[in-house]
Structure formats: structure tokens, C-alpha cells
Amino acid sequence: MREASSHLRLSGGSSTRKFAPSPVAGLIDDERPFPQSETLDPIPRAWREHSTDTLAVYADRWLGTLGGQLRERTLAGYRSQLRLHVLPALGKRPIAELNEDDILELIAELQAAGYTGWTIRTILTPLSRLLSHAVRRGVIASSPISRLDRTERPAVWAREQRILGRDEIALLLECAPTRFRTVLATAIFSGLRQGELLALTWADVDFEQGVLRVRKSLDRQQRRLDLKTRNAMRDVVLMPALARLLQEHKNASGYSGAGNYVFVSQRGTPLYWRNLSRRALQPALRKAGIAPLRWHDLRHTYASLLIAQGANIVYASRQLGHGSSDITLRCYSHLFDQAEHAARTRDALENMFGEMLSGELAELVEVVAVRRRAWRRTPSAPNLVVGLADA
Image 1: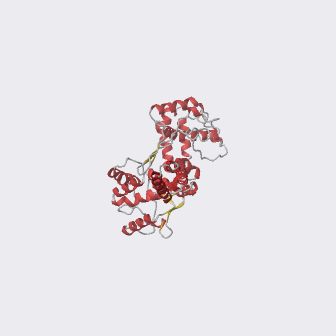
Image 2: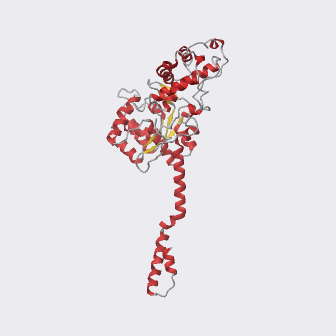
Image 3: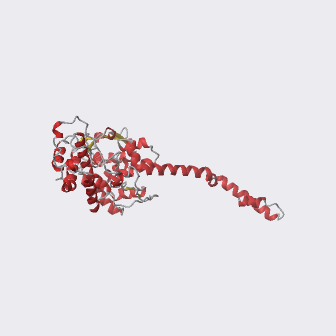
């Protein structure tokens, strides 16, 4: 696991931030053990009869109830984590016999295999939800995961953010393949998630109002789906230069109808998500000599631009489509702090020393020089001028 550190590099180049773990949010704690969204239905008698099931059998039943509740990608992830990591170790154990030691042994095995706290949390998420389901259905009395002490849970470190500086943004766009320059620029200066970006149609680009209307998201199977949350549905400010670039892109495209996708393949289908990295971002990074970064770091870069321009938490949260301002603050509190302190420092320095750099300083220097010359011609003159000059 990465060791805690904290550094931030500014002024033109890239900005890399690492964070120390929060004593509360940095751990998988009792208040927020894992996401849980199943409704508290009355306990069906059929579920109470499964207390003798093995974990593998119960997991299969539980996964079968999630169709329609979760997105396909999320459900596939749950199946994969259980199949690859949890069931090989605990699948043959009766679910009613699982205890804290079993969970701790699983955590220890995952740590020994080199998995980070984030990855272990991801692996334990479906197990935690499964056990919570069993508690609510009366199959088990309590979840062994919820009974773990805070010190027994894997520490989770905030993920590293890579933020491009102004010079790097210019260099990246200059080195981008011509075909992908507009999509990269739109990602950087709109902060849209990858799926939201690929789902854009020309009907979503409002040149008159100067906004991108985010209404849909494209999944990994190229399906245009509704957004996960109401707050994700938003109008993102379209700066004039980006609007002009998109208009040029539209004029040159053979697919410019209202229902056509903005970023398309040669056949008019939406760009494939993996090609954005393989054919657009990574080649541009290599040519520009910029350190590797993830596609999502372009979204972090946009967030940093918003905050640097003085956007408050509420506005930044709306532009980013976060579920709440708390999410924005958790992700970018360091940037808000930096922007706030930078503004305070500038104001304080200006108030204390700003006049020294104005015309008043030049006038003061000239007065001192005149008095020095007068003092040299009159050796018996008082030392008042010396005091003023030394001051």
C-alpha cells in the first residue's frame, strides 16, 4: 500500500497531490461500512429458512434478486469480486457460522497478496451488502463485518489526483491527434464523465445559450442510458472558444443532425470508450512528454480550473454533477483550501506592501536622495535624513 505523503506542485507544470488518511473518512468505519441500498422489506419466511445455506448458495440467491436494482456493470463487478476473492475462501462455510475471524483472515490474505485498502474495500462491498441482506431477512443475527473494530478494518487512502497545469493543457492539445483534439478539449474544459461525454448528441450542444446539456450516459456496451442521479442532469457552461471549436467540428462532420452523436467513428457510431485512452489521450501524452494520467484526471483538471477561478462549493458541485456538495468537498477540499489561502495571502501582502511598488515608492526614494545630497553639503546638519533613509 502507498505510504501517506502530502505534496502539491504548482506554477505551470502538473500538480500532483497525495493525502494522508483521515482519521474518520480514511477508514471503512461503522457509520459508513459499505454502500447499502436494499429496501427494508418485511422478512419473508422463505428467507429465514436459508440459515443453513453455505455462503456460496446464499450469494447466488442474493445476486438473483438484484436484477433491475443495479446497473449491469455494477452487478457484474459484484459477481466478479465474490467469485474471484470471497467464495474461494469462504464459499463453503454456512452463512450462519461466519464470524469476525473469518473476515479478518480474508482481509489478511488480500493484504498479503498486495491489494490496497481501496481494492479490499471494493472486494468486501458485495459481501457486506449480502450479509446485511441476510440480517434484514432474519437469516443471521448480525453481520460479522459490522462487528469489526475500527482498527481491524483496512485503511483507505485518498486516491492520487493528477491535475494538468496551463502549459501542459496547451501542450497536450497541440500534440493530440487531429481527429481527437476536440474531444480532449471538451473533456478538459467541461469536466464531463467519460460516459456523459460520449453520449452527447448535437441536440445537447446549445450554442445559443452557451451550455452543454448533460442528460444521458453511454455505458461500456454503447447503450445510451439515463443518468444515475438527478444532480448528474445539468447544464455545463460552454466557454466561447470551446463553442467555436465544437462548431467547426460539427461543420466538418458528416453526422451533424440533432440526433447524431457529437464524437463519432467513421461509421457514425459513438466513439468506443477504450479508444479515447488508447488512440487519443495516451498518444498525446507520449508525444508531449507528459507523465501518464487517467482519463478521469481530465475531470479533476476541470475541477481545479473552476476552483482557481473562484467558484464556490455549491456551483462547482452543480457543474461537476455531484450528488451533493459534500462529495465535492471530500474530493477537492485541498483545492478550495489552497484557493482560499492564496486569495487571503495576496490581499494581505497587497495591503501591507502594495504601495511600495506604486509611484509613491519612487517619490519617497527621490525625497531621500535629495536630503542625502543636502546633508553631504552640510556636515553639521542633524541626522534626521539618515534615519529616514535607513527606515
